[in-house]
Length: 582
Image (cartoon, rainbow, N blue to C red; front, side, top):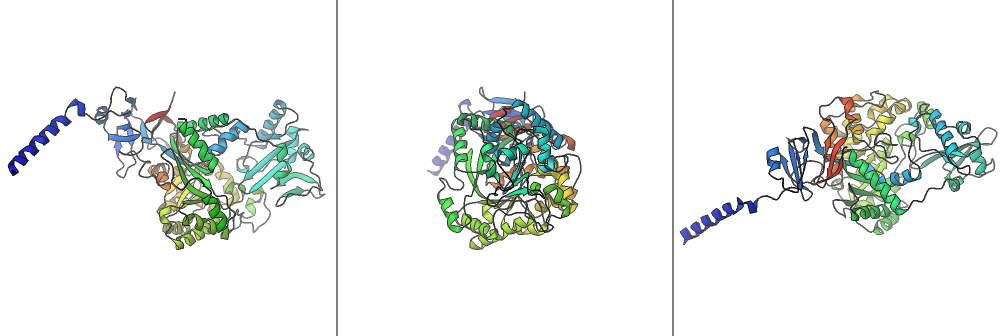
């Protein structure tokens, strides 16, 4: 009986072998095959291959051309990479595309670099717009203005004449407006006008308004209406921007500050087949900073953390803690100092920045969100602000372990070894923006001093402590990858992380530079880790999502100065080509 069983088993195995070798049983063809590339998988072995095959949105082969050719069928899209560098699709973990899309409809962004350029822009608007319209300048950060100061009312008078003109400078919880004489008159602002609660009307020595308003937007809002585009116009603008991201090799993004409306609009694009990037949504917390208020906000959300799919997913809750270093509102351990006064418009030697929330409220929100099962993150730029957040994270950790939640510090611009050690113990990771170093580093060096600039965007300090770091742009205005308010060209971020060079070529804090492979991981696998996606994307491996980019130059070997000029010549998401260079 045993011999009969063994004989039958051999016959069955032989039949199975014959069947598996027959044409009917051949492997199913791939949907997309890339051949002849220099494929950097970024896997644990740093595998470099020639070819990639994708089927059903997943990678099914990474290896040699011969292996890939065996997966080519009559309907397979084949791309000949001709030796070009191929990398995993880039994960841009900090953008504000919904705001940028609506803002571009209202007023296309223009980067102005000097008082003279600002005045010329105003003159053109005077000539091109009706006399009853106020002229509102596009956002111009003072660090980008050659004269290192905001325009004055006299500057605007010289360009606008009798037309009301206003410059608005706003970030987080601070707003400054500069009105020319015509705007002051049109708004009815006099020496006797009361300032709104919490605001200020700056006056000269004689008591007359200078045109500078601080946190007093209510006095001018009726003259500065925003356009009301149709819903389809808004969707089209957003889709256009997302496809521009694809041109840079970006295949995944994180909207770092949205809500239920943002969730709905991304799902709408997805349902219409118009979503070309995978999207994780960061939800802004709307709370009074109390435990009860935070519970009510979270309980009223129509989704839970992690819900969604590979295209639209709910990410962490976000709180705003301080302001921004470009605006002198980052909350710092030490006073800004007199050298910063002219840039930021300060006069208090003890000034350390501004807070959006006090320590008690920060702790309430973080502990409550953690207790209710959410990943959390915080906008916090200054080192003292980070200290306060980590105190709150430690409090949440005392309730229950928090390391597995991957709490994220957004910005965290000033890296210290003691801070990095605290972060490592708590499993905290970093979301930071080298492009601000590139664009604003020279102005910040003058205002903050070289010691602080050595710590600014201190990637090596974070890396040496073992932290996961995501490089990104905080893109919020403009559509051009290089000329937006915050350039979203990821190769500018990579160039800056590697060289520590500003746009002028100056080097600050060279000891904080990281290697090319490490920097790229901060835009691929480490960036995926922040959102618990490391098993799905960030490397080119069998079973992972079929997202990749083919580059115009070899990122790993090209001259340093060429890095920031690299573009994607082919971007693939889910095995489908979403961008192909002309």
